[in-house]
Image (tube, rainbow, N blue to C red; front, side, top):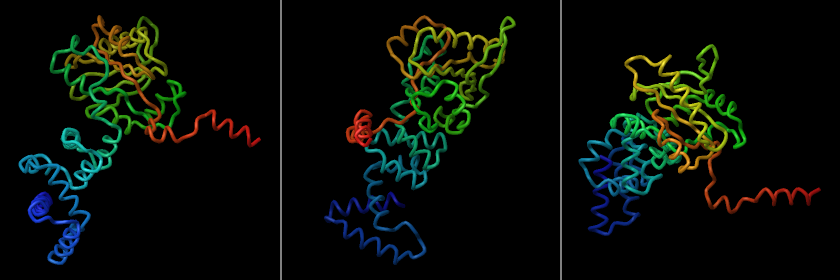
Length: 302
């Protein structure tokens, strides 16, 4: 109904030159004619017009968008300005049953731009179907700004905070992840070892070993992660499970170094960066004082 009203407004504005004042009058008339129905404010009628303009295909609206509530539609209209992005987020919202707030968070964190961008060797280590799904599940970078930590936080602080905020962590990881544990212990040759974070991916039917490094990526990091993957495959994985997948999260990552390091590795591993603090918009970066300026001001006050 909202789409049809919006379509009528668009057509009449085009044919008869309707302006915004006519929309105000139409809102009044609709509320008078249907006093028990809500949603006929002038503001909402303008959204209906925008909705019909953004989605001209009535079949797509009825088959796909009808699965999303109206306030989800408003989030797509307000926060995105192109059809491709709106389609992508609408499909993800339906697939993952996101609330309106979660949809807004995913848009604001630029989920589409980050999805499937981690450096991996999945194509050579996994069957194509599993490789495509595994690559799509990884992001770069991962945004952990919900932890409230500074960029100087240590690995153990980050790990502990992620477990304390495991609901938001799982949301950032994406659909299909199930939390198994942190500092998961196993023994090899009488020596004890501990996996930072262990998850299971329901769609991939595979364990996911996550190793955190509060530094830039170094090729030697892969040796430790490979060792953990072998241990999980030998001691934890069941026969029906697929090979375990490794995810190395680093503070910084040189893509060329990562690609070189993964080239001859036979275990499925992805390498991505994480962010503890959300980056400021460029316009704010230029308007905020630098550390040097603040120090000068404080020095002058003394």
